Structure formats: structure tokens, C-alpha cells
Length: 587
Image (tube, rainbow, N blue to C red; front, side):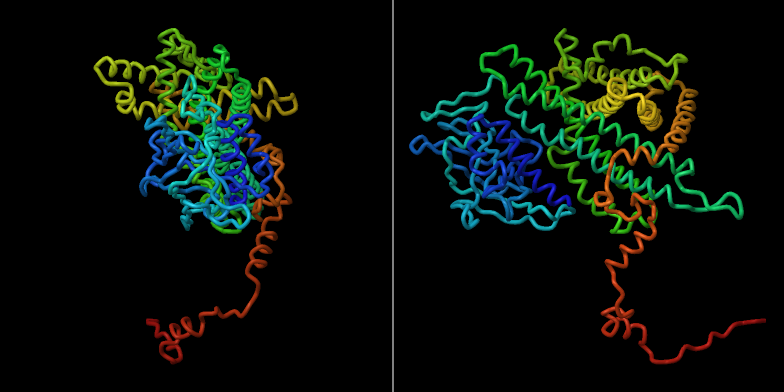
């Protein structure tokens, strides 16, 4: 149930994450004591997006003006476009929210900060004075979550409700800013990282349904009198589904890796001492890398999952269109992931910008994060070619993507430096290079997925599962090259004859993976309750389960529809006459 899942995610992921990420330990403990930890008389939401602003966080317009006389902040919605919009849990449920608002002290605007605001009275759930809330109504999906709008009219909150882990305001109105602004946005990475994992979780459900169905569905026979062929044994059907299976596994490998980096970075931030300059620089470096990596991974993993849902639906034929097999509702529920927590296109451009900035830093001899460390070898990679090496060597496949990504990033960096030299500022130059930024992020992210897949197999897989996982990783890497073959021809790493070899290898690994397809999907350990699609049931008796489900949901009744007398009968019997016999010309 994506509605319930989202409701819990809004509180524990967004509200909780913001309080923990931007509040002090004392503030976090305070809100835990108020019931935020166990949802007791307390449910939090996350008020960032406004009617007029989404991606541009710095442009949010809700205000929080400090009143020195009363030691309070006054929260206001200055005009309709500043209305908080799409706020999950706000319409009916939330008692509190974290509000992103402009901190204004003594007339000076210090930018967007986070504040805890109580929305409703605890005892009777009525709205607090100055709070206006409404339901934004019907959505494409996820109707189980009560998205709402919020307006604030002179809502007063204690000064201590400003979350002060980084930005602090004292009783006299003195403002202390963090040494580096990047730290204040660390909590925003939480959602991006979790959505990479979500992409795997949802993707594995639908690839399992489609592959289980393909293993029992028979159509056509090449030999008269023989059983029809299972559709999973058709080579083209294998090509439709098995690369998607490999993609879902790749998402798991990479999401786990980035999730571990996120956890380590958040712990470093929690333990950071104000006077620890070396620690501060290390944390800032990690946060920058997380921003770039999570932006690209969130975008391309959520797009990939949407693609998996739709392509697996098509692979199930007409039965994929049935509401009882879950594809339609899942797609409608899923695609918001491509928009919230950062529009995918904007995040991709942001990731591309960070890649160019990393290349610029390298040219100046400055350090860069591990995710782009391969750029240090760019001069060695720039003109690299396959030169007869094996396309089943993981190192060669990773190198292929590093050559492609490195060339794109460095060409874009050359153009960027040229534009700066012509007098454009950084923002103007990056806008000119929007397409290059997008392409750089796309290829770099695919390189990351492939490298992480091979790396985790090499370092973590036991002998019993190493080869089956390696077969999947090789299929994913080769299929990815085939899908973007023009890129590798343009960059000179491959020749046309090499593309033919890639195609042959994709076919080979599809055949190999097909032999273990049940094991690959059973390894997800998904119960029929979670699968919730009769054609994807574990025991393989899909038709019986499907027929039973349809008849349970549509029990036998009068064979005439309820609108028979009012509509159907008058339409069919417009003239009460016997059918005329059709005269045939038999000459």
C-alpha cells in the first residue's frame, strides 16, 4: 500500500530526517519527548514545496521574521504563490511540520532555514490560530496520502523552533551562520538516497511477476503436435526482460553502496566539532560527493524503475493490463518519484554541473571525490581503444564507460572554460552547456552502476553465487553498451565489428541467465502477499489464481447489467420486430 508507505515515509524520512539533520541534539531529543519518535499524539510533515517554487529551494518565499520583543518567529505566507503545496500528510493528519522559510532578523534576509511549526491542537485536532489548510484533491496516484496546502498568517513560534544545528539565532537577534553552507542541506539527501533503494524494491516486484508469468505462459509451437513454447524460451522475449532483471540487481548494488556512504557521512556530521577544521573539510567533501552522486542516481534509478514497470506490463500481454496484476496502479503511484525530492531533469543537470566542477578542480590540482577519481586517469583513457581485448573482462567494460564519460566531461569542461574566458559567469556558462551536462551525468551514472556491480561481486560474493551474479553484471554492462552503441563508436573505443560482438554476447548471456531465472527471482524472497499479482504467484498456477481472483472480485449476479432496463433494452429494441431473414445472392 503506497499510501501507508508514503505516510510513514513523510514522518520518519522527511520530518524526522529534517529535525535530526538540521536540529541540535537537544532539539531532536525535545521533539522525540513530545511523541515524534513513536507517533504518539504527534505526526509530522515536511513543508518545503510552494505553489510557485519547487526545484529552486533558495527561491522559496514563506517568511520567518524574528520578533526580538517576544523572542518569537512570525511565520507568514506573503502571497498565493508562497502557499505550501503538495505537502504529504498536511490535509488531514499532521499535527506538526518542518517549514522551509526565509530567516529574516533585523531586516536582513539570511536565506531559507527550517522551523518546526505546530499545525493542529493535540486534543481535538483543530487548526492552530493563523493556520489555513486544504486538500489539493485528486492526483494521478497515491491517493492514500493526504497531500494538502498550507498558508500561514502571523503564526508565532518560539525562537527555539528554528532548527539550529548550523544556523543559530540568540535572544538578542545575533545570527551565527555555518562555516560552509553545504552542511545545511545534508538532510535533503536522505530522500534521494532512499529512492534509489525504492527503485530496486519496486522494480524487483515487477520483473519477478513478468518472469514467472513468462515461465508458465505458452504460445505457438514450431513443431506440429508438440507442446507450445514457453515465452521465456523465445530469444526476443529474453532480450525484453533479462536485461531489466540485471538492471534491477545493479540498482541494488549501487543503492547499497551509496546508502553506506550516506550513513557514514551523516555520522561524521553528527560527531563534527566546531573547531575541527580537518574534519569539517572532510565532511564538506563527502557532502558534495553525495549531492552529485545521489542526484544522478535518484534520477536514473527512478526513471529506470518506471521503465521496468511499463516494459514488464507489456511483456505480460493483455493480462498485464488487468488491474488485478498491479501494473497500472503501480505505475501511477511510482512516477511521482521522478518529480518529488528533486525533478529528475533538474537533478541530472545538477549532477552534470558537479562533474564539470570536478574536472575543473582536477586541472587545478585540487582533490576530488572517489566517484570521479577515474578522471585523474583521463589522459591515459582519452584515446583508449578495445584493441582486441575481451569484452567479457569486467575491467575492460568499466574502462569503456570511463572513456566515454571522461571524454564527454572533459569536452564539456573545455567548452566551459572557453565560455568563462569569453566573459560569461559560471551560471551563464553552465546554462549554455545544459545538454552536455545532461549527457555527462547520464553516462557517468551508468558507469557508476556498472562499476559498483562488478566491485561488489569481486569483494563480497561467495563462490556459490559469484558466477551467476557475474553473468548478470556482464549482461547489464554489455546490454548498456548495445543500447548506446553510437556513443562508443563516436568515442573510438569500439569499431563497428565490435558492436556485432557485443550483440552476440548479449544473446549469449541472455541464454545463460535464462537457465537460472527462477533462482534469480526467488532470491528476492518476495511472498505472494507482496507480489500481489495472480499471474506472478510462487507456485506457478497462474491461471487458476487469476480466474479465482477475478471471480472473487466480480461475483455472479443477474446476467443482465443494472442499466439493462434503462439503457440497454431501449437501445437494442428500438423497433420491436423479428429479425428479417438475410437474402443471399446465390447465383
